Length: 332
Image 1 (cartoon, rainbow, N blue to C red):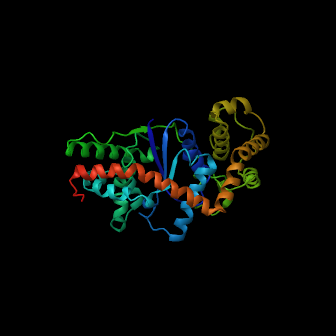
Image 2: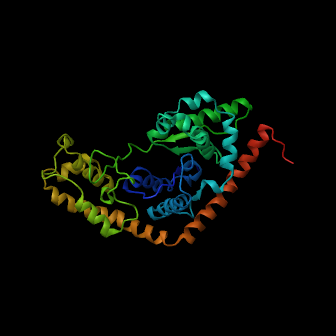
Image 3: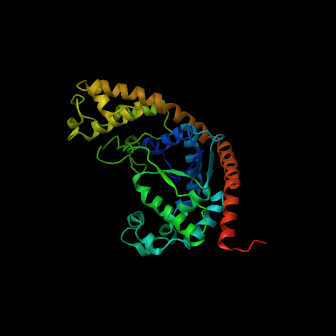
């Protein structure tokens, strides 16, 4: 069976955008692939993290995986720092990748900003660690969004150069798994801004830890306008909040926006919001309740991570040992 590796950074306050953009797709992938899901805490510290918040966020992402439907018995779920193969292989890849390749990485330029000389060296070589994450398991496919496509291409370059330099056919050439156009979820208070955990208003987002009552309240308070629901997407011009809510409804219902408007277009927005509320509560309410339960049981979550790390090491250690042999490290 083809093997998937995918990682999520441990950031607190996971919200609807994280679910629709990534985690929901992970749940579907486990039906067809051998899946390794990693909370990438080594990547997280390329920028300063408060230690206790990092630990808490690592557990929260793990809880979100489970609450959303990822089965930790069928799949491997662990946090990156518990498996040393990632860091060890990343160093070897630091010596394989070329500076010119890293200089072309647009995400470093965006995150480092104008004061690039003050950015951490870890942020600069972040793509090499991402390559190690994937190739430590000889994963064959990686689900990617547009923001990670360039890094995946670098992973392919590193695998090809390693194979070429050492005259081996060792690392697979990773195939991207394109999951369709990413769902862009906007703020419930301002349809021109992305839903974000950093927004000062908790009513701007639906947190994955929100229970049914909180989900319903936030949908009811979401900003819209007094006009009827448009009958086509062209009718969303100048109505970003309306467009956002219809998009959320369509995505949760697993239908296209066109299908939703063909059925509901011309109706009162108040009636539509009632339908959206019922749908969001049905889809998201159980996730929030399970998130709350898991957040109150850190011992269980830590156990999942511990077992997942053991299984991850069983796969990655022999691969790393072969790499060390190929490179010429003396093993006594």
